[in-house]
Image 1 (cartoon, rainbow, N blue to C red):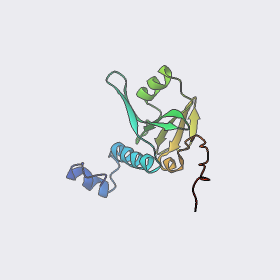
Image 2 (image 1 turned 60 degrees about the horizontal axis):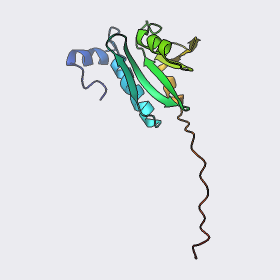
Image 3 (image 1 turned 180 degrees about the vertical axis):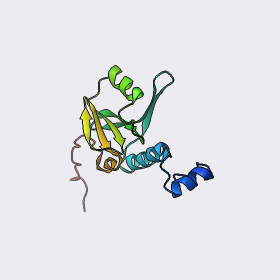
Image 4 (image 1 turned 120 degrees about the vertical axis):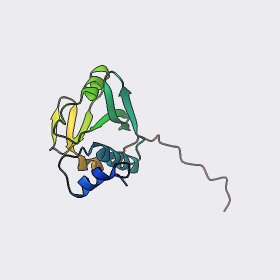
Length: 136
């Protein structure tokens, strides 16, 4: 399903485990599905001048930018860097094929670790219903 929009030559290279394929769109699709499965609404940032940030989600009552990188240049993310410099964020996440690390406010995680991001919503405490008027 993830490759249905690709041409037949690209699909064939994927099946043959070609090393020259940019898997970015497949990774982004998988991340979108995983975030949705965890209850997140997915938004993105796009600027003609600065580029795009793949995902913006509300996490622990804060906006969390998430960037997905499929290549070796996973630490190059001009749109995310611009986005982080113009707004106040506690953290951002870059998902890639590389190991865990952190640089300033950006946390670098392997792509598979998206499964550990849990949505923790703060829900107002509700008063208990008074059912004393009901006769059973």
